[in-house]
Image (tube, rainbow, N blue to C red):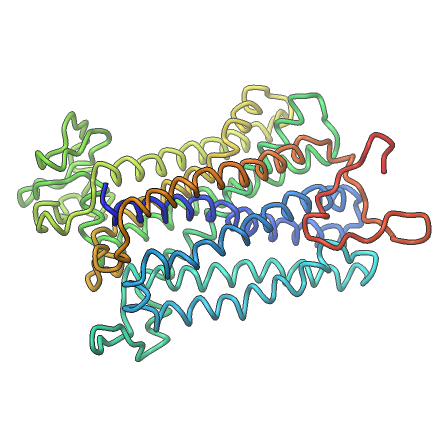
Length: 467
């Protein structure tokens, strides 16, 4: 492994940890806003019970997302100085806008959301929850604008070897931005619905059939029923956009090496093993013409093949082919779970069918796994470019010896497994508690618990005496 590949692995490793936590906070923040809105509208205590229950995992995920995100910013300078020199005039301001408009917004109202219900009153507290939820969506907007520009760059000029913005609207609203933003946000909602539903199913399997548990499962299945099929439609439009602007990536995703003859149509390769050396997909299981129908929406449409591009410009189809199928396969299972839940709901068996509940528990991490698979598909599929068609990965990397990069990669693996492994274990421990045991916010008066001062204090637990 050379230094460039090790730097890619290190960045991929750290961003894989990071992307999980913002996805959870995006979904949970909106879910908390809905719960508080329902509580204010109906006055039913079950919604506030659920709000308090899910507020604690949200605080843990938010804290871990902030910590893991800081590391990524440093790596742009330490490992990708060539990229920073070339694209810093565009990506730098976009990430700064994210901090100024989103992170400050979230940080400013997060304390009120976590600890301020009895201080500011229900109305202002609900506004704070909505502002935090809005902040997570704004943050995703700027991050996806930056990444989308790297995938489909426009609105710039190359001046003395540097990308200089000349039209910020075209930079931000580049051709792939709407599809990437909607795909990621809906993915966060789907992943959150699966976590919430899986948690409810887990409690039901252990005999905790109380109102908060049933409500969380019901709300999650409604969300999944709407969001999972919508995600499939968005993914289809995203695929058409990839065909138009990143055809080599699409060819790698589909494992197509040779163009079909006119009138034959392109088969859909369900399974196989793309061999980059032999330039063929071995053991291919194909469905005739289905590739044309899905990729071009016509019976005999043609798509580019990998051999249409120089070998140096081809993504690694062996990886992209399977990460894409992992994402699609998990998506189909999510849709199946959503429709199974809808069918059971009609017969009043949503909370009773143990096979369904076990399936919901098994699917609880599937949304996050699909996000990671999709992220690897889009990022590895962009190779060998960092900025598509403009800057190669080899030109973007810093000139470090491979040994130094390998050493820091090993340190990252050890630290991340310890820190985020402990954080994830603690978050799962919080989810395993009965929602009816969610501790109310302390008043902080004489003889009572004091007001917490740190975000993670929102995840405090009761002791054996109920304090």
